[in-house]
Length: 169
Ligand SMILES: Nc1ncnc2c1ncn2[C@@H]1O[C@H](COP(=O)(O)OP(=O)(O)O)[C@@H](O)[C@H]1O
Ligand SMILES: O=C(O)C1=C[C@@H](OP(=O)(O)O)[C@@H](O)[C@H](O)C1
Ligand SMILES: [Mg+2]
Image (tube, rainbow, N blue to C red; front, side):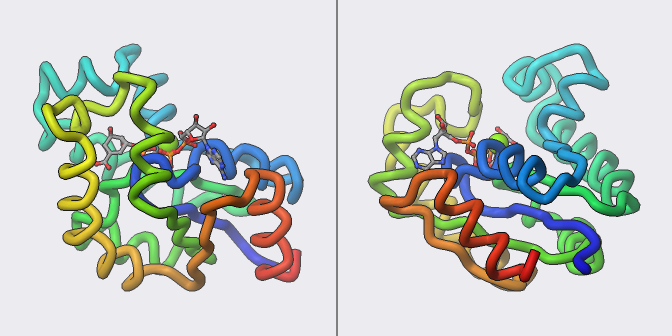
């Protein structure tokens, strides 16, 4: 029996979407670090980046992760940058099964271009930013991951079923 399932991966990989569906499928609790931060602060992520900077957001993110890793029977969707801090990577490794959701650059661009809620992508060339972040972060996602799941051309329902099978759940 698995304890928790943590979803990591880049912006647009589907962590929030798949996390919610996977939790329902497994009858687990669902937490999304970004949503918990927003609920706690009463502010949205862009506002937190504006007022406190990325460092302020990262501090809140580590604090929330520190609480959530003590859950049991939970699916935890994380934000794409959670693996940047070593202390977070250590917490993730102990939290349960860590699933790295991946997608092609084209898909990540397509899935993130519609909304303005990701401050790091509000730049002149979001595609170049996505490529830059993947280069930096891919090795770190792989460092914490217990499995890697491709989402390109696969519906969220399909991905959820695939993860459930991988976990024997
Ligand atoms: N497997 C998928 N196929 C197509 N679209 C997807 C898939 N997974 C997520 N999406 C869509 O991509 C967008 C970003 O998904 P989201 O769950 O917010 O990603 P993340 O939390 O990893 O940034 C949403 O509009 C969502 O509906
Ligand atoms: O990649 C990142 O650094 C971020 C990803 C976002 O979450 P999603 O990956 O769910 O979009 C959110 O935490 C914040 O905008 C920063
Ligand atoms: Mg998300």
